[in-house]
Length: 150
Length: 366
Image (cartoon, rainbow over all chains, first blue to last red; front, side, top):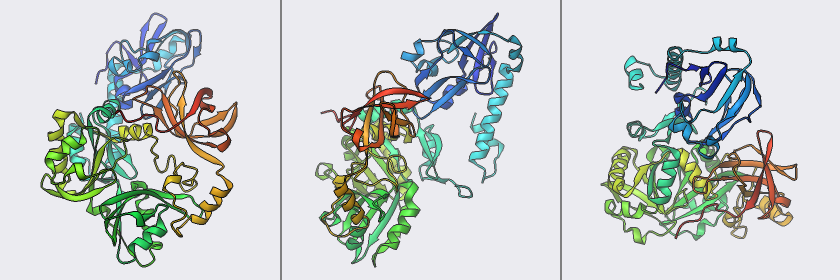
């Protein structure tokens, strides 16, 4: 599982690359792994506005459709059309070719709410452990088993 | 499922060992995929796949009154079965609604083994016991693990490992014999639309036979396949999933299962309602829908419209791995159920064009 240090992250498993006032947004390696094979992507058009914490697009795996949430508010300046014809790029290269949209930010102070790579890694691991605990709620959870999950 | 422990099949360890991604399904912890749904789907269409379907229930009806009980419970004509043959049918409520869709094997003139949906095991057992009229009904689900070996290479892979002459095992035939040293009931049936076998065996033999099949079959392209591809495979063939496409509110006539309803075989539960429905004509039908263009995959619960008017609902849908476009089963008003009818599927508030098409969506390659 990769957590590039130069990116910022959300609790909904999106990543953000900040360059000046421009934010590039995608979904994380963890998110694509959870979804499984992506077969369909729906993205906003250039000029659409997106609002922090609200869904701006949909990523669908074979099994389910999942909303993607905007980490920041602003106007879409680019939308990754390659994903429409090649949605599987999200599985192959979630932090690279499979970026979703670029946003001209309207309120850069929103960036303060995003997680660092280390925070996000900790968050994902906690979530994984919570899931494991749920799966085995009728059994004792010993540390060895948790390590097997890594 | 509160308070009920999630059950594991005898192959749970094997699934973990193979990297299976486990999910809960019908109260069981099952692999949804190992390598990936699309890859596993293609393997079954082109080569072969091995499925753990031990979650399915097995219920035996036996005794001198066994045939009479079956005839009362199912819509198909069980009297037409010889030992060693299997039949697909539904069990109905008096209303004609479907209790479950089942396959049953005639093991002997006075013994029938039903394979029922995991989600319906308890309900079916109670229902069958209640209406058995003197026959013995035994829930034998704990006695069996079940494997499905499916795909064009299935016979080549299985033959060296079994004492059964597979060339003599026709579609919907079942024979008892040995597989890799274990006793098994092997039937030429499946849920993928491909050639293949379903193998009933003792839980204690399951892992060894599973491993031998995988080892024997791997050079021929055999891979383990999870429930994800099982769903896309069956849907491409227009095969129904109980709880999604059919339920107690749907009759077999509405579901296009008239071919397993033998109204002239004598009395059975639901017959009067079905006779009436057949005379009056069904008000809705389960149809195949093909999405036009690059629309999002249709999914269970999406609304179906005709020129903007709601006419039904998607019961199962996916992006067909074989066809590369969205396909769905949907329950729609009869007036819009003819093949070729243009409909719309509402996906996240937007309407997408679809057409009623003949089933199956994908035909077997010659």
